[in-house]
Amino acid sequence: MNIQSNIPLVHLSSFHTQGMANELSIITTEQQIIDLLHKGKFQDRYYILWKGNNTLFNGNFQGLLIKNEIMGKEIISQDKEDILLKIGGWEDWVTFVKYCVENKYAGIENLSEIPWTVGASPIQNIGAYGTEVGEYIQKVEGINLTNWKKEIFSNEECQFWYRNSIFKTTLKNKFFITAVYFKLKKETTHYQVNIAYADIQNYIENHKIDKTTLSIKQVSEIITTIRQKKLPNLEERGTAGSFFKNPIITKEQYQKLLQNFPMLKSYPITDNTKVKVPSAQLIELVGMKGVLDDGVGTYKNHALILVSKGVQQGEKIVRFAEKIKTKVYETFAISLEAEVNIIGA
Ligand code: NAP
Image 1 (cartoon, rainbow, N blue to C red):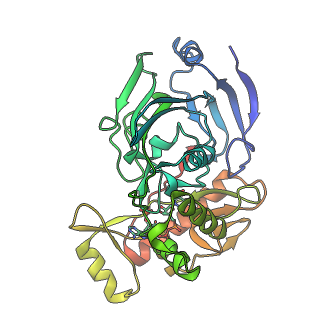
Image 2 (image 1 turned 180 degrees about the vertical axis):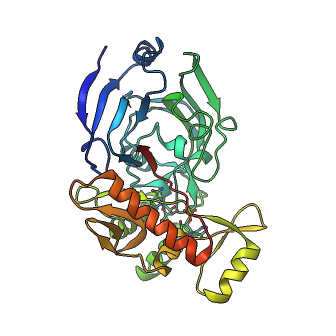
């Protein structure tokens, strides 16, 4: 059995926090995960870690970290209009989107440059610029860690909703995703790209680009440029992208807030008694954008992104996040909820 002991956490998450994990195991086949866990030695003292780009270790990790490194890319079927692809869990998300864009497989181009893995994409139902990955997932395959059976979840069974799925709730840490099936469209001249978000619209206007003939390649390039300007470089500082989810509040509460904060934005959601409010703006309005406090802060170009300098203690980042939550709650009576998985103490 491939188990390593006393593992520094610093390179296992994009926050590069201090601390140690008791053990680490790297899995490259379905059988390995069954052999590793089925005897129950680790009970629930294990955590399935992907790239670590959405994880904050708060101190040491007293247990076994499991990295899923199952690869693979296969075309299952295709016709003139659609293509069905089976992609291994550990395949790199950015590379996969590039492959789709180059081959004119349309649908996920708005999810360009998200530093993720394919297997973790359904867990969080990653989304950006009005597209969610769940719209293009046909099914998810993996090992159920409660009965050791290989199981397949249809799109409906995945229970996708805003930045969430069954794999982040009922099956959190209990389902080992080995492959994801994507149903994508072949790009034709009729394909409608999704360019509704203001950042994309502004870019198109500023660069005098013809909206009517935009290809998925152009959309992907535009989003890549916007993201590179707005988001910190993972190589340069610790971060896990957006730290909090966007809160959903009642329209009534929003109307009341507008009396004191007329600039507060909102976006409609399917439940028309409620609206989505951007966390980044709430954080900016409480004066916490671009603040740096003892090596931990918010990014100067984006208030929702917590950043850290050098190797920090996870608890310092947690404390800073709590400070933001308190200020936002005191000002707006809105509770921010972390999108990042906080693991440990
Ligand atoms: P943005 O474009 O500045 O917008 C701020 C927030 O308002 C976003 O979170 C977005 O919600 C919402 N919004 C803006 N325009 C909207 C519209 N036309 N309809 C509905 N909602 C709208 O956002 P950003 O922070 O620069 O990020 C751009 C996109 O990348 C967003 O979709 C964001 O969620 C995504 N992103 C995700 C992560 C992550 O770590 N998960 C990190 C960075 C960016 P939504 O979040 O629902 O889109």
